[in-house]
Amino acid sequence: KKKKKGTGVQLIPQEPSKKPPARGLKDSALTDYYVKYGQTEPPTIPVETVFRGKVYPKGEIQKHALESQTYRENSDETRAMDRLQEDLYTKVRHGAEVHRQVRAYAQSFIKPGIKLADMCERLENKNRELVQEAGLERGIGFPTGCSLNHVAAHYTPNTGDETVLTYDDVMKVDFGVQIDGRIIDSAWTVSFNERYDPLLQSVKEATDTGVKEAGIDVRLCDIGEAIQEVMESYEVELDGKTFPVKAIRNLNGHSIGQYQIHAGKSVPIVKNGCEASIKMEEGEIYAIETFGSTGRGYVVEDMECSHYMKNFHAPHIPLRMQSSKKLLSHINKTFGTLAFCRRWLDRPDGGSATIHGQNGKQEKYMGALKNLCDVGIVQPYPPLCDAKGCYTA
Image (tube, rainbow, N blue to C red; front, side, top):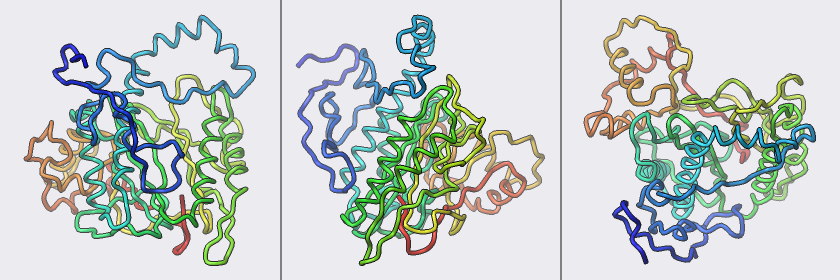
């Protein structure tokens, strides 16, 4: 058991063994997988420390989807171009490993009876700890979504929300990590009742299909068509009634830019979901997101808003209210153009202990926040909901 030079932390690799309580994950899923790297259980050593002097895990490598691009697999020129991108790849893989470890940790404690606010707090604090939160340099990519049942996305509890997870809920857990503005956006569905298994299976397979179909020069509409075909081959039986799984036609995957979670291109999840001429291009980063529903397959904005984000192209707008100026200054310093939620403004650190210590809490900010939304500097993102009583994954 050699001590790693310079880290001051002794890494002792162990054998992972803990199975997650929720359904829908791979049979091989272990919530303490990270102990094989010498990480503690629960994880407390920053991921950068665990991998100091080593390379970060590579994740899933796919073959090029188009015949016209297969030359890249053996081209010296492409390899040289890849080497120039090594710095970017390292940041993205670092963020991805933080996400994996936080995700596995979260999967160990997400069980019926947990209060969603406590769950988010615990997950986000672990995220901050493992990424070594440092303001805009690195930290959380966006608020933790924990949308239940007919709510498909963009719900996180506001302060005072007492919602508790139950055995019959279907919850979408969606959280992000960012390093130098390179955002890792990844989500999964949590359920405990086996009756939802076909719904979970449909979106999992659809996502795998989307990832496989993606590639340089691939038309976005073709990816959407492939995703829909796989997803809608499933049906779910609930209380003796059979529901076909429908792809939610107005939700999409998206391109991701630096400090910009939605960078302009959308990856549809239905046939003819966008203009046929739009393609994926070299150097772009995408989140493939697939949503299935037992309801209409169409979402609308509903319920109290918790997610907000400064408009990436917000012009300079003179503000009259002193409180709005103060809040905007706080947003600029703490989140920049990354998404944030009201719960973070209520924290003693105001969203970043690195920047504010324990003196960042925003008081009576709702009027200012509404004003920033009204003038177009900040965009609200309310929860996206399908028909009440249905289930989305």
